[in-house]
Length: 549
Ligand SMILES: [Zn+2]
View 1 (cartoon, rainbow, N blue to C red):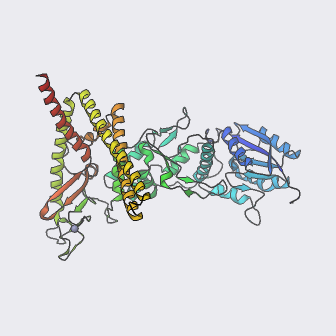
View 2: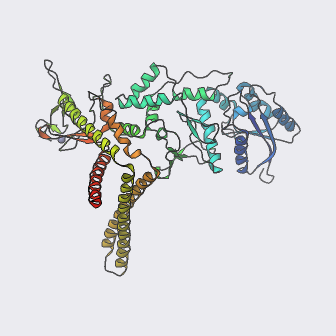
View 3: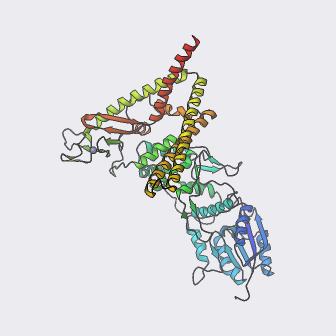
């Protein structure tokens, strides 16, 4: 064998059928061809001799012109190798397909390769070389897994060709039929995703959200995918319906795709043969913001991410989460305070207490009744909302133009200052090195100072970027800047403290001794800058009046 190297004369076989529910894009003729060509390029012993395409022929039977022509070539010994993208290209009828793979091709001395199934008759995976096994597996396997493998190899080809490609089968999005590689919202399931986020904000766990969705018979992402991908008649039975699981719900809650961010390149595959996915470090992910229309508001998404971080331990039977669960912090030791009951049947009540306080030892107890705390939080929150509404009114009355130019001027000024600061640190860094070289500083000092200046420079650089972003958003004319006000505004008429409201507006509630509490609101930075702005505008107004006089 060594001395006489055998070459295989291959026919690539391509089939596409709308009837079969083939995804036009992923199964398109050119995609199949690209994949097979890329495969052959890597093979030393395969020569491409023939290209056979059945466009518009179902895979249910084998009565297809290009397929028959290929069989003729095999009989004429022009071809002794058949390559397909996946088994379903050869045929959809798995019993017939199995006959070809197991009997007909081996009998005719044909090497058969199905790239996505990792199947090569030359390299039997088991000693008895029973190739029907993978076919049977394919029948029994959840079809979606097969789809995912197809899509993955599609990704690789696209990336190699330098095309940009999104996760177009992600639940909630569809591929735009007009514009290639663009994601559009799947209107059928977008409300489901919004509902999931809403339920989470209201305090439900991922598990109970899954149960709820199953109860009201919402198809799970796997089911929906099947619905999208398998609108064709099949001769074999599908698996039982896949249900919603807590994991599926969590995957949705954590996926930034829903705020319009596309993350690419999280995993890589060494080659087509190794199906194992290798995780790519987060720093190397490709992150594209505002890539497509968002389904979830960014603020809601961020709130949910914070909620997911908070340990809200609830008793398995009791689903209820209290408005302040996980957000009450001890002012002295910064522990999360826990909600307890007083364990008397006559006069039962609940209270928050520092967990580090035990029998008069450790932290002081900071004991506060839940009703009292909730009431206090509610009153303060109401006041805060009122104050924000006042500010909004003032902002509305301010001349937009002068406001913008003032803000721009201020930001530019800040930017110049920061840039100078950055240069200074860079110079210092260089100086430290010079001093080290000349012997003024020893190794240790050099490292300490060098590190210090590097860190400072880094910090300033971040600030510079932030200011630049701000300036850009001003120039573009985004009103995003004041959007946070609407989050407070929506609760202006509310009369009870709800979990959703707390999660959206409050970072944490800190409880000190003697029932003193402090509330950390969200958007505090925005709130303070607007306050400052209002003050400065008043000043400008006063001074300009003086100038006129
Ligand atoms: Zn404490």
